[in-house]
Length: 224
Length: 224
Image 1 (cartoon, one colour):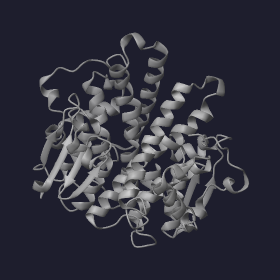
Image 2 (cartoon, chains in turn cyan, blue):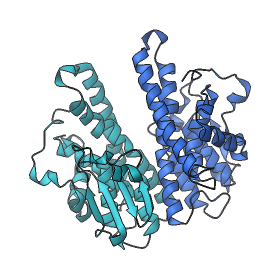
Image 3 (tube, each protein chain N blue to C red):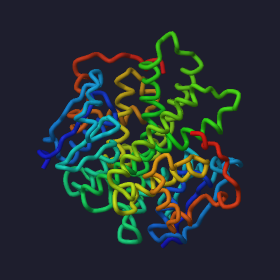
C-alpha cells in the first residue's frame, strides 16, 4: 500500500515531521522517501514545482493523488486509512472536536515559539538584532507555551487527552524542535512530561530529523 | 438540531465567515448567533475566555462540545453532519486531497493578501507607512493571488473543481474581503469570475458581514 506513496521532505522541518509521524502511525512506513536539500534549493526544483507550485515541503504523492500542506496530508492519511494503525481522529464528537481544534491550533506553536524564535536567530544577523524585538518574541513564545501547559494540566497526558492523536502528530514536532535547540522545557512541567512521553514513541523516533543523530544541536534557545 | 448550537463571531472577520458559510451549507441556519463587538473587546470577555482562552473569534458550541479555530469548526461540522446539506468534503480520494489542501492553503490568502494588506492600513499610521514596505506587501499579495488565478484557470469553476466544497467556504471570505475594500479583482479574470459565481450564493449572502449592507466600504485597496 505504501509502495505507491512518495513523500518529499526536508530534514529539520516541523511540517514534514508531522506528515512522517502520521505515515508511521498509520503503518505506512514503506513509502518512498525523497529527502530534499533546502541548502541546495531542491525544494524549488522543477520536479517539486510541478506538483507543488509553492515549492514548500512536505509534498506527498499517493498514486496520482497529490497533497500539499502538512495538515492536509495528515487529514488525508487518516481519512483514507481510517481502519489501519493508530486512530488519529476519534469518533466521539467531543473528543473529535478537541483533536481537530488542537491540530489546527498547534500552528501557533510553530509561529510564535519554534519558528518564531529560530527564524530570528537564523535570518537576522547578530548585529541587526535588538533587545526590544528579542524580548517581544520571547514574550510571545512564553505566552504560547503557557496556553499548552494549561491544556496539559487540565487534561493530558496527550495533547487532546488520554490517547495519541492527530493533535500530537501536529504539535509535537514544534515542541521537539524547541528542545533540540536548547530550550529549557522544564520551565513548563506538564510540557516537559509530555515531551518525555512522546519523544521515544516509535513513530517519532523513526521520523525525527536524521541529522539530529550525527550533529550536535546549537543551543540557540537556551536563554529563552 | 441547530437549536443546541451557538456561534460567537465578529462582523467582518474572514475566519468567522468561513464557519457561518459551513453552517448555512449544512442546513444549520437556526443556530444561536452571538455577535461580539471587537471595538468593545467583547471577544476578551469572561464568557468567551472561559471557552476560548485565546479570546479569538469564531468560537462554536454544539451542546457541551466546544470547537475553536475556523478550519476545525468547518471540519467538525462536515464530519458530524456528513449526510446533510452540501457535501463539503468529497469521498473520491483525489478530489478529497485537493479540497483538504486548498482549504488549508487558503490561509495564505488571508495572511498575504486580505489581512496582510488591510492590517498595514489599519494598524500603521499613515505617517509611519513606507513606500518600500507597501511595495513588499503588494508584491506578496499579487504573488499569492496569481497562484489562485492559476488554480482556477486549470480547473474551476470552484476552488477545487466542479463543486462548491470546504475549500470555497475557507477561501471565499478572504477574496470577498479584498473586493469589499476596493481591490480591483478584474486584474485576475478567473478570480473575478469565481467571485461573481460565489458572491450571490444563498449561504454567502446569508452570512456576509451585516454591516456591509449599511455602511459604504473604504476603498483602501483600490490601488493595489
